[in-house]
Image 1 (cartoon, rainbow, N blue to C red):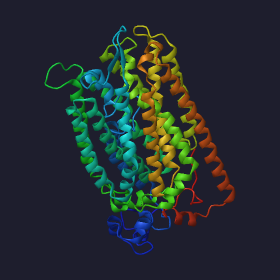
Image 2: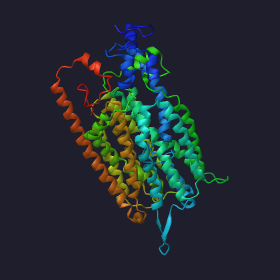
Image 3: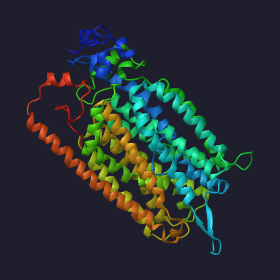
Image 4: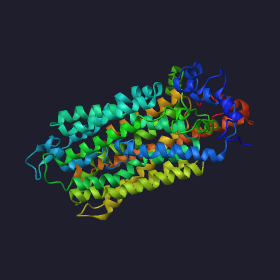
Length: 541
């Protein structure tokens, strides 16, 4: 019979007197050797599995969901693809994607982001190279910050790292309103990307430390859905900003002031994020034990704050890490191109500036629906993640072809329908995050995986804007749409290779170990072993 966690059960006593009689205070303070060398859960829950009450487990999961997911949805809107992270490939009210609306509201002219290169043509030929680099340089900042920020999150208390950095990030965002030149915008966006790099990897590591393998795909889809939800809400806000005709500031300056002030408020929540489920202040002591114990079977671990060089080396040599990086890099080229240029491209379909913003609605709607649907299917049916990812590539590629090859007559419906299909980028991105984090064990290796995913994200976002050539607008930007289609062919091929690699490894392990030693598996669960080191780890496809 499962113990009653409303009383001090034998399971709880065993959990808090594990190997070296460590206490919850040891876990909180990180004072024991075990808590440094092994997973925090090794100290808190011991080496033997304990029965848990399913009713209590449901209550614990509900509390964790309500504390983490709504705030992470808001954080994803404000952040990661500031464009992210994540981020969809479309207009969002976050500090990167709002560049697209800011451009529509006069930033291009005010900061000289567009330069007339041939005044003798009608209309004059305009180069948008400065705008392309204003989009890309944000991701150079992210590249510089990703690994140091990620390892800081692993080594130190999560809330004490996230809180100050997010508040500082909000301040940098608001300072955009004070920029007066394109050179100043370049500098501001580099530092914006550097600080913001803490958000996407932080969210990935938080989810992997609080949820089981089966639960992670839906939760990654939920927090990633912030990109789609606020495509809709953000577009509405931007439409409202478009109505401003007075005041001392330009309309694009108001957008950045709003986004930055909201980010500062989000930073206050970040101070309250617990270091791990074993230290979750919003759970009772009995519930914290359940929160940790329920993660034992997946063998992915909870949290270890020691950086391990052998795990860094293993990640660097792991083909799965590289394949996931290829999937993410190729998939994210569309984000860098369309987040900065999407409203401008729609504007060329014969729609006004404000109508171009409203046309972002169906893109966000499709992204939201399919991110949640794919996450639910992945939770319900175990090995469907990569298959769903590949299937979602097909309508997106069709959308690119529809935009490219259709007639761009005044308010033509076909390119707008094709543009809406670009929303399938959302489930592709969230599934790729889930696949990477669910299939990686070992705290340091998970940190490397999280950072690598967003290094790939940055590279894709740097490449994307460079495919937009303003001089080819009359031909419907063929370099952009053909380039995106080719990138998604690469995404599918890399996904096929990843599926085979993980399927073959699971099959090899099952043959080598036809009978599972449950006791040994439970002992190894919280030893901070990587997925390669732990023979009981199984990859989810």
